[in-house]
Image (cartoon, rainbow, N blue to C red; front, side, top):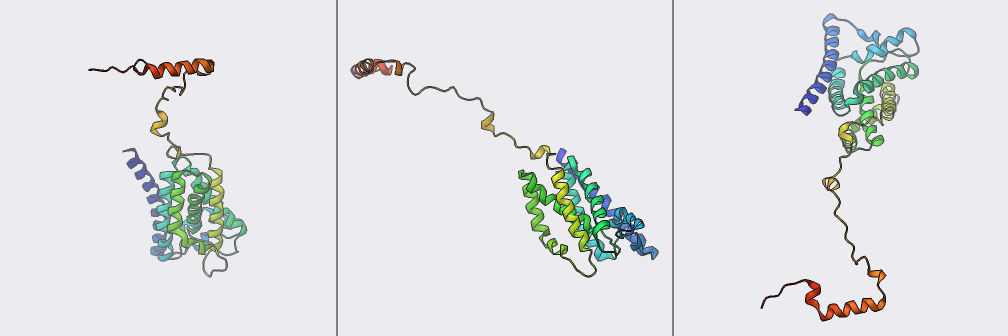
Length: 240
């Protein structure tokens, strides 16, 4: 029941975020607007508004769809598996990616949520490196399989693609994963095995306590007596 509630909450956060992207784009299309001027424009004070606005602005429906699906999956994943740090990590990835683009990227308008998507992919992957819990390692492997093709997106000089957003978002994701690596989720803690919880059995010495206190002669006599009277030493009962 608790897991179901947690999953619903995670999906709700992701759904609201993606719904906001679609609402803004539909408003842009229906009204004949071009919100591209709200994108991040590097090293201009007025271009800093894009740090907040640019992830919600998309050029067309293919651009919007390509970001909506991974954004929903990755947002749900982070809020489900890393709930303790999810909100803070998400805000750091969102804001730091936009700020890094504003500082280092080319002087063109940068729009779209792809920088945030790359930051989320990088965050989940590098959590597996820094935390080394079973949960984080499995999630890192899943992300690698699903989004391995994203590595090509960080290569420079791609026409019409803000590869800087991709690269800088990925670097921010590494930083945020390292920053929160000590804040371990309850599910990541190693539970002791059942046999470790059982009380230790009473240890019994292989030799009697006075073995080394006996002289050689005494030990020889004891062995002879045991050989002559085996029934008495073994405490066995015999019936005729």
